[in-house]
Amino acid sequence: MKAENINKAYELAKERYAEIGIDTEKVINQLQNFHLSLHCWQADDVAGFEVQAGDMSGGIQSTGNYPGKARNIDELRADVLKAKSLIPGNHRLNLHELYGDFQGKVVDRDEVTIEYFQSWIDWAKENNTMLDFNSSSFSHPKSGNLSLSNPDKGIRDFWIEHTKRCRDIANAMGEAQGDPCIMNLWVHDGCKDQSVNHAMYRRFLKESLDEIFAKKQPMMKDCIEGKVFGIGLESFTVGSHDFYTAYAAQNGKILTIDTGHYHPTESPADKVSAVLQFVPELMLHVSRPVRWDSDHVTIMDDPTQELFSEIVRADALDRVHYGLDFFDGSINRIGAYVIGSRSAQKCMLRALLEPKEEISRLEIAGQGYKVLGLLEEQKAMPWQAVYDEFCLRNDVPVGQDYMKEIDAYEATVTSKR
Image (tube, rainbow, N blue to C red):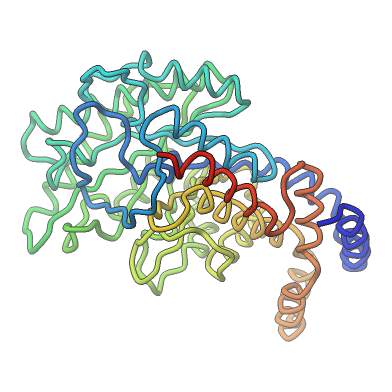
C-alpha cells in the first residue's frame, strides 16, 4: 500500500475522531506501549527441547501437521524474530520451562537451573525482547493426572521443586532485563471420571502453593491460572476458577484469565472489573475457544473486543499483562503469530478510540438509547486507518502485505525443514 494513501486516510480518520473528542496521536502512543507476550509454543506445537521429551500429555493437545514447524532452538528463535518483524511495536516472549537450552543434556524438571536459560537471556538482550516464563507440569512421566495435588508425596515434592526452580529462573530473568518477569503457574490436575477426594486434592494444591510461594522473589511476578477441564480430565479440575480466584485474592497474586478456560456462556471480559477489586493485577492469555478450549488463533471477535474494552473502561491499562496462548499446527505457524497479535492490537486500538467518558456520562444520566447508539457508531468509525498508520510508523507491512513476507519465508526457510 502506498504511504501517501495511508497518510491521507489517517488524516481524515484523525479529524473524524477529533470531532468526538479522541486524540489519535495520544492513542497511537498508548498502542506503542501495549506489549504482548508472544508464546514460544506456537512455533513448534508445544514440543520443547528436552532430550528426554515424550508424547504430549497432561490435559492439552495441539492439532494439525502443517509442514515447517521449528525443530530446535535456533529455528524457533528465527521464527519468532520473523513474526516480530511483521507485528508493529515491540513485544515480549513467553517461555515454558521445557524450552530450555539443554544442549543435549538430560535435565529433569526438578534439576533445571538458570544455566539452561542464559542463552535465552543473551538472545533477548540482543533482540530487544523482554522474557516471561511458565512452569511446565505436562508431558512428563510424572505428570499423570495429578501433579501439585498428587497424594503421592514424592510426586508432589517433585513438582514443588520444579516450580520453585522455575521461580528462581524467572527472577534471574527479571534481574537480567531490569523488568519483572511474569511467571504463570498452571497445572492440569484433575480427574477423568467420578471422584470423591476433591477436598483432599485441593488441600494438597493449596499446601504446595504455599510452599512454592514462601520465598520472596523481587524481580518476578507470580500468576495463577484456573481452567474448566483438561483433555482426558473432564470431570473434575483441582485448580478451578473459584480456587485460584480465592487464593489470588487472599495472597496478593496475579490472576490469569485465559479466554478459553471458561464455560461457553461465561464472559471473561466481565471478570476484569470484578476480580480487580480484590487482586493487584491480571494476566491475560488470549486465544479463541471454538466449542471448548481449542486454542484457535485470536481474531477480532466480539469476546476479544469486549475483553480489551473492559480493561480500558476500568482504567486498568497499568494493571494488566497481555499474553497470547494459542497453538494451531494446522496453518502456517508464523501466520498464526501475526494474525493473532495484530488482531489483539486492533481490539486494544478500538478500545482506546472509544469516547468512554461521554458514553459513561450518558449512561449515568439515564440516556440509554444514546449509549447504545454511540457504541454502535464506534464500530463503523475509521479505526483501520489509524492502525494502518501505526504499522507504517513501525515500518511493518500494512494490511495484508505481511502475507507476501510470510510466503517468502516459507519458500526459503520453513519449507526446507
